[in-house]
Image 1 (cartoon, helix red, strand yellow):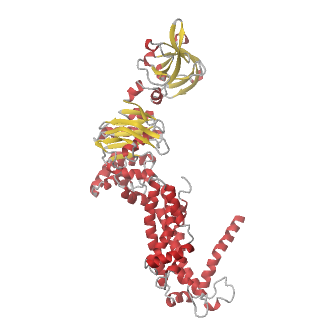
Image 2 (image 1 turned 60 degrees about the vertical axis):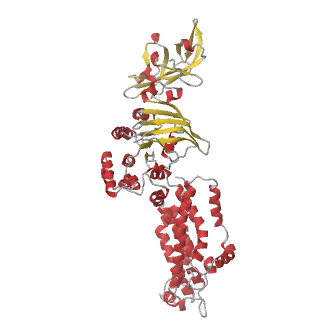
Length: 267
Length: 359
């Protein structure tokens, strides 16, 4: 009985704000500040309409999709090769390499925003897609490599040995056997990377200049009303931005957990 | 098919374990050679060296007269059957069997034709569309065999292919492998820790210990003439009795004595203070106490079906295994006499364990 109550409390605690945000996003502007709203009364889609008609919210969504997809694709592709090499090749200083890769992700983002800005400006990449994808890669790649190392470790080496004896060279062994077997791990890693890029705020704010390259989080943060903060639209935008990620996670949650815990337990 | 030759192979793992030291072995074209030894003796490493999955620290490997030491596994044209079967779990049985053919660039029709032929031969033709996870252990084993056969490689490498099967299936599959070898006339290098498998399958067997080959020969030759106590104990079931004997003077004559056994010292062994005598359980027979070579008390009776194994406590805390045709269990504890078939005993140096060739 008590565990169940704790679970219900936890659920209310975690989903309450999301529920309130969702509710507020469909409540007419005029009623938003009348008092606490706990149940839907007058439903209205005006905030959503304003969002796409008035603010061209499609543009940041498009930007976010492009940047997140590109980063994810590159990250998983290179990360997979890198992780496989770390797992299967014998070379000196393997632990050092792995440690260094992780260390790259340890820098607080805020501490490298300025140098990165100067670097990107020098390269002429400010306010471009590559200008976001490249910094994202440096932060997402270590996570990808670490997750995939754990995943590849648990693949039985004998299956790869079998493929090699069956006449498959190293690249074909990867393509025909290793990557198909690692598909769940690759998918989980891809989703995590995608979420990271989709939600990233600081770099996206610093390295974009105008609405044509702004991603969703930045766009939401920079919403302005003429006389007041447009809370209804901000919440509607938040819901729009969260929905695809939430759906993805719900669909693949089993795999994500498997992918994250892979190699954690020997078996 | 081709001959396989291992020449002075050395391999030490980074953890310091020496898995092959100056290992040399010739496997003739079409021969079935079994590498046998206890776990950790380096037999699997030897196989992996031939396959190219491990790189030797020294020495060379030749297949069909060609030095392949520097060649990667996929260019050696060998097929391997793994203990875990190592089937591709994401592919159907047909794709598993045909994988090597596809890698070799055969046309789709020829692959299908050959896969079907192999599957019929192994009795798995109706399983071709299944996934490995839907198969029983024995069926997986057949698929693994099929995958190797379909390739028509220069030689087959089999790494404990039967050890994951239950007893009945193991004996069936063992016969199947023997039949395949005869039909294909294939060169096979087979690794096992089971001496019975080695004896029944091998044209020749190579007994290994600590990265070295202790003895190579036809199974019965190895059984009849073990070159040292290790081979004597490893080959043959039930295990041979090894009795440590010391030289004593009795009645003006030198004898070797140990565990109730008394052996007249052969003239050329007069100088030896001690030897080890090996007597196989089937070379001891029950007899009346008065005309026996030694006496003992029956400790345990193990009926094996076709024969019965007795553990007999003889003097000096020694326990001898005796194989007899029949012995009632209720006579456990009886005093019995044992007679030794002196023509079949093995003599070894007690220090080195090496065979004394005079015997």
